[in-house]
Length: 113
Length: 120
Image 1 (cartoon, each protein chain N blue to C red):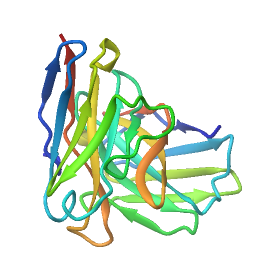
Image 2: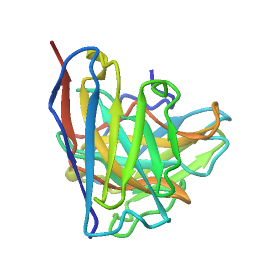
Image 3: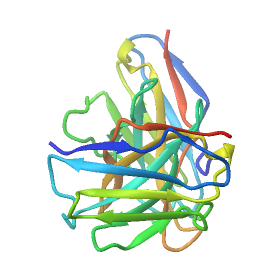
Image 4: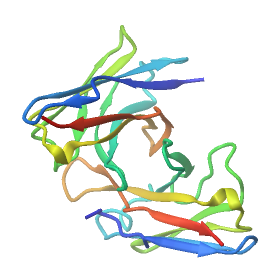
């Protein structure tokens, strides 16, 4: 059981926007502005898409954006494209133990219809 | 451009120790701006953070694995290593090494991953 809760799957048609949620607690997502999002293709290493809740690393498409409200963070993919079909993971710090440590969500499979 | 490469045995027997090394190329492991982590992923499942080491040698581990994990760094060889003791089938996974910026615990560079199977 993962520390952060994500929907198992999300789907959308090309051109549409989809939102992937990442729900934690006041000890992780709600406490830190350190939510990150990763994209992973089968058999490949994850790729950082968003960090610090809403910052895109250089080279990541501006179709990807992030936000947070309370204990839930969100990854929004706008203008959905076939290449966006992949697994997505969120992560955060958690302070349920000290020092803070990294926790991941269970992952969301994005399907482009 | 910094690259990471995992290496180590692909098969480990139950109750024995899993040992992996991550070699850093194209950059320095000694920069104080980063820390270095191990992350694993069982087949068909999600990511699990194992632990991290700073260039100072300070470490933090996942509380669920803390009693079995040791991460060390060899800056002269530009490598950092993972030791996981008393392994079971539940430790079978792809193991990734990764770099994160200290101020933002986000893993910006990953190795390709190495599959480790625990089997007798």
